[in-house]
Image 1: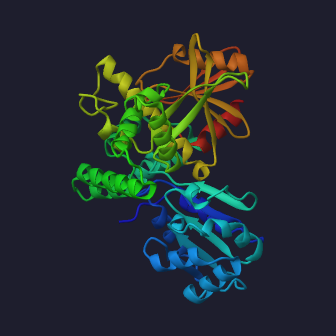
Image 2: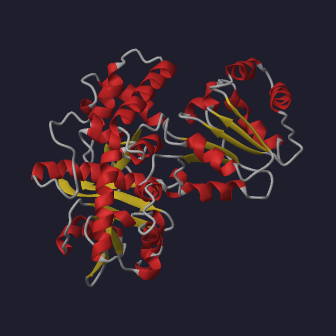
Image 3: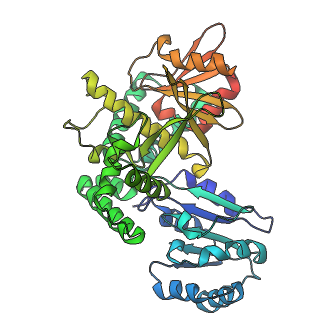
Length: 439
C-alpha cells in the first residue's frame, strides 16, 4: 500500500531541472520514514536509472572504500552498475553512508559528471563526509515522517484533502468538516507518521506493536553504527526530550552526566531522531536553552514515562494533561513546518529575556519573518495573542499566527493582523500566502 508524499512533486521538480551541471541531491532522514520508497516512486517515471543499495551490496561498499582516486571509483561504478557519465543518466545510491570513502568523491561527481543527476540517501548523511560537506551545487534535503496532510492522503480522506488544498481560494471550512479534521488529527497524534505504522493501522493490524518493533530496529542500527557503549542513553535521550516537549530542554533532562548528554544529543540530532529549535532574543548574542522535539509524534507518545493515558485533543480535559498535550501538539506543528521543501526552511524560537516569560514558539523566516505560536485550545480569544503582540511590536512586523484547534479566524486591531489558523491548515505555503496578503 503506497502513501502519496507531498514531497514527491518537489523532489521530481529538482530532478527535472535541465540545466547541467546538475546538483547532487543528498536526502537524509531518520530510518523508516520512507526515503527509499519515495525515491523509487519518483524514479519510476524515468527510464535511464542506475541504482544500488550499499547496505544490501556490502561487497560494492567495501570496493568503493578500497579505491584511492575518483578515476578508480568511476571505473568501479561503470563496470558494476553499467553507468555511463556521458549519457543523461540518474545515479541513485541508497544507504550511501555505508561507504566511508564515497563522501570524498561527491565534489568530483558534481564537477566531472555534468550530464548525471546523482541522488545519495541515508539515515545520517553527515556520516557520509569525514571532514566537511561540499558546498555549491549540492542540494541537501531531509525527509521526515508523514505530516498530518500526508496522513490524510494515506487514510484516503478524499473529501478532506481538497479542502486544505483549496483553502486559500475558498477561505472557509464548515463546522462539520472542522470537527472531522480534529477527529483525524487526534488519530494522527496516536498513530504518528511512520509509513509502516500508518499502513499497519490501515490494515487493522497492531500498529503499536509495529511501532515498537521499528523503534527497536532504529535503536539497534544506531548502536551498531555509532558503537555507542552507553546503550541505555538512546532511550533515555528520546524519553527526556518527549517528557519536556514545548519547554526549553536542558542537559539534565537527558542525563546527570553532562558529557553523556551532549554526546548522545549530538548523535541523535545527526541521525534526525531529535529536532533542536534554537531560542534567541532580538540581540544576536542572546541565546537560551533550545527546545527539542522527537522526530515522530507516535514515538513521542509511546516513550514518555508519564503515568497518563494517551493524550487526545478532544477527550483530554485535566489542565495538567492539557499542558502535556500542548507539547505533543507543538511537536506535530514543527513536523508540518519542516515538511516544506523537504526541510529547507529556517525555524527558530524567540524569548524576550531571561526574566520575562514572553516567548514565541516558532519564528519562520522565508521571504518574510513570521512569528507562530502554538496553543492546543478548541477556542481562542484575542488574549491568546499576547506573546505574538509583544513580538510584533518589538520586531516591527504586522502579522502573526496562532496555530490552534479553533476554527480559522482573523482578529484585527489597529496595528496588527492576528491570524488563528487551525492545525490542519498548518502548511508553510498557506502561512506564506496569508502573510503576503496581510503583511
